[in-house]
Amino acid sequence: MEAYANVLTYAIPGFVLLIIIEHLASLYLGREVNRSMDTISSLSSGMTNTLKELLGLTVVIVSYVWMVGNLAIFEIQSTTWLYILCFVLVDFASYWSHRFNHEINVMWNRHIVHHSSEEFNLSCALRQSISGIIGVYFFLYIPMAIVGIPAKIVAIVAPLHLFAQFWYHTRLINKMGWLEYIIVTPSHHRVHHAINPEYIDKNYAAIFIVWDKLFGTFQKEKEQIPPVYGVKKPVRTWNPFIINYQHLYQLILDCWHTRNWKNKLRIWFMPTGWRPPDVVDPYPVKVIEDVYNFEKYNPNVYPGLKAWSWIQLIVANLLLYFMLAHIDRLDGFGIIIFTLFLAATIFSYTSLMDHHPVAMIAEVMKLALGISIYVQYAWFEIDTIIPGGQYLILTYIFISFVLTIYFLFTTTEERKLLKNMITENSLDR
Image (tube, rainbow, N blue to C red; front, side, top):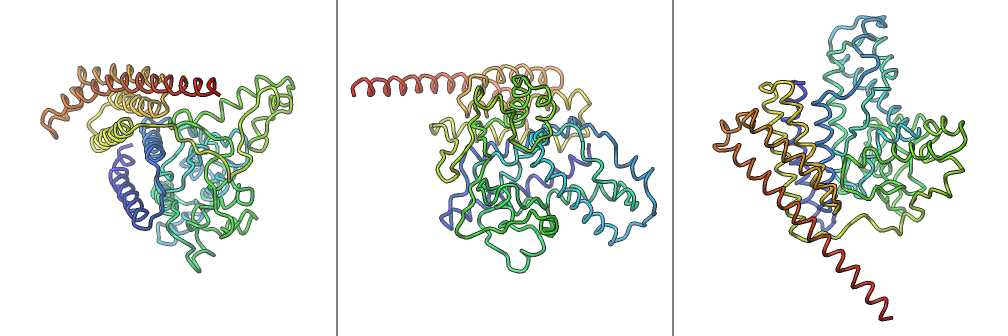
């Protein structure tokens, strides 16, 4: 865990810097690629994934250490070529796990959050899952285990392979010449994130585009068909926790409602989006039919709430960074309670961005957890870094509580007023 935290202390500032550079470049080019609330949601999703990893919530059915210890036929020494071979085999496994996530109904729940943004930018690359709790794709690593690639090599290559997928989530880089035939480029990945009929479920590769060409899932980006981003069943929320489990919840409902016992079993393993015939009409689900004419999720947010949402994101990120940088000083319970505090924070402000009253419940939990950390841990000796730091955090927590009540009340009153105005105008006609 400490090694993972140390890596993130370098990776997170790098990601943030590149996102800022992309935004400044988009302003210079006059091409809007970011919307405030969407970007906040994306970055918040990245934090939830980090919190999941810190809690160690992933359950591995068969560990790679066991596989390489029992299946290895060869013993390869640690050389440059071994790292290259490991990278290629990890990429091969990534292609198939990615494809399974797209094409199998229940597996889509592990991946939907990454595609849930209706924009395409570097921040949406950080929309990573918290719902993939069980490691089901261990069998894809069997070839590496048979070859005898040591677990310590995989532990180094795997995060590098993941981070290498960040840069191509952008609309600001056009086609890249001869590289288009070898690696995944922004053009290839724009196709992958698109919901156009011509593009959907294409270009699964992570680094080497040759896998898609080899297995028949390649599609190049066409100038006359601009990609439209998002998912066919819009998530309609900024809350990353809800996004992560929306699809699973729908599967559970359909499984419950269908009267056909065969369909109760096969719904989980049918192609993504399949629903039992006897639930389609009684329980309709909104699906985008015309990808070129649909309204992006964009609830009205006045400047005060938008500014406060950015402040919440920044504070949560700073506290997460503090946690990562001092993970070696925290005991097990300290990590759990700090993680729960940050989770409640993210749940609260992203729900507030949706104008949803559940934000108040999360805010109460955040207040209770924040006071508990102060009483039991004095906020993990943050005063040694920032004089009076624990009191600054307590002040922030109480301000957050008050402003959540304020914003929930004012947005509710505004919506009532708007509804009354619409009703009155209708009656006048």
